[in-house]
Length: 278
Ligand SMILES: [Zn+2]
Image (cartoon, rainbow, N blue to C red; front, side):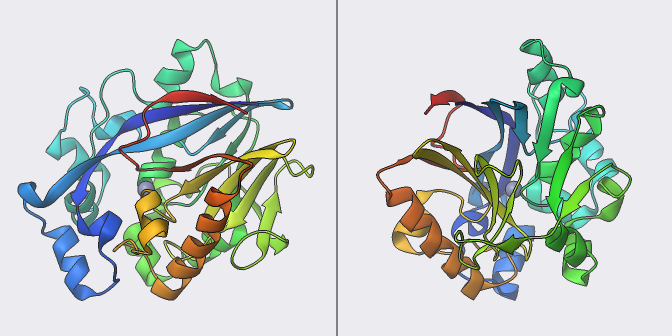
């Protein structure tokens, strides 16, 4: 199996987002009002998998409209996102980095994708979907979709950004995997499994990609780098610290497994674009 790590632009967020170690009003204020010097630039990853069933994409990054000229454009961001999310993310999408542009550079059309798997509905993971109409399936957990009705998620995940897109929802089922032992086996053969790793959102999925004994864990936003599970520091952006900790424990076990080829977080600046064969 071949897995390509793609960088689909950046976010420039408060240091409290990856390593806040609490979810409280203090951290929220730190994140929304962070001055430039207290911010870090993090990549926004998507993953292209050359799977025996076809091309699988995990997450879709930012929509080109967020950064029409390929530079940080505060006005374009404010047109696209509510003010509090614009202040949180400060996104940028350089030319050629939008998911559709990167696929086109590889000669791949959206209709060539047999499946797009979404880890969760935050805008830095789903807005690139707008440019992928024609993909054969887009899969999301029913739990993520359902809980998006909660006020906290309405603020985080404005429905207008994705509600009209053709998204297939699947329920998590009992599984041997994950802190809740809940998972969605996308092809029914254990090769691509969405494992519920809640804490960042209720329905959040990390994606386990398996080839024989070897596997890669696409962590999503359950952690921002291995530092989170090595030091058990929880991210400051999420809905439940206790669930974040349970998810980090499970991720640590998976990352330390000798058959784990890589455990990759969506916003880890230490993970450059690369191809992993396993
Ligand atoms: Zn994210």
